[in-house]
Structure formats: structure tokens, C-alpha cells
Image (cartoon, rainbow, N blue to C red; front, side, top):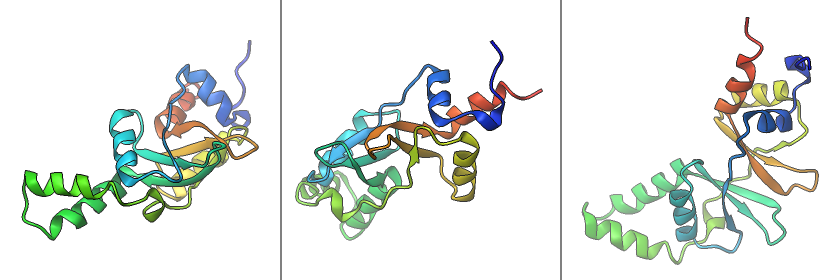
Length: 155
């Protein structure tokens, strides 16, 4: 069977072609920031936590960088040390994910990969949440997935 030209490849083709569907780290919209930290630590494949409502609709994104900055700001006002870190971890039980999440840049699973690559390059993004037509989170596409798919078309 002939391969599709690269201009005809969709996000779903790339995900199916890699044989690996990245399970995104997620938390519910009413979760605490601590839940986001736990989710990203336990899911080593992603560097973002996606905030979803009870129906799985994508509402926001929290990056690892944001979590680290948040920790840094909090820890920066105290004496550095393990005690400060433990104190910060206890305090994030009270903070909500909605306090730090940003509006997600997302792609539809049937979007053309050329458009997604342009979006990633122009916005300096390494990964994007994939949603279906109902805006439900179905996976994550990262730059390595695109490079793997592109290699098949290099001469």
C-alpha cells in the first residue's frame, strides 16, 4: 500500500502510525494544585497537566514550567531547605488548578499535520492536547511524533 503524501497526513494518522498514544496527565477542574503536581509526577510521558471538566472537555493547561515557577516563587520568600519544600507542598493543598491554568492551544484529531506543525513552530510549542469534535481530550501530540512521521518522507 502506498504511503500518503505528507500534505495529506492528519494528527490521527501520526498517532496511529507511531503505535503509541500518549496518555495525558489530567485533573478535574475542581482539583487542587497538589493534584496537578501528583498527576504530572506520576505520568512521566507528559510535561503538562490538562484540566478537564466532568465530561472530559478540555478547559485548561498547566505546564511543568508553571508548576516549577509557582514552587520557586513560593519557596523564594522562605529560607531554602527541605522544611520550606515540605511547607510549600502542604500549602498547595489549598490552591486550585484554576488559579494557575492557562487557556489551552489544542488541535483536533482530524487536523492536517502540516497545519499543526506550523502552529507548533510559530508558537514554540513542543506538544499539544488532541481533542475530538466535542472538545474532549483524547491524547497528546508531541514534536517527536511529528518528526517520526516526517522521517518516512525524507529522501
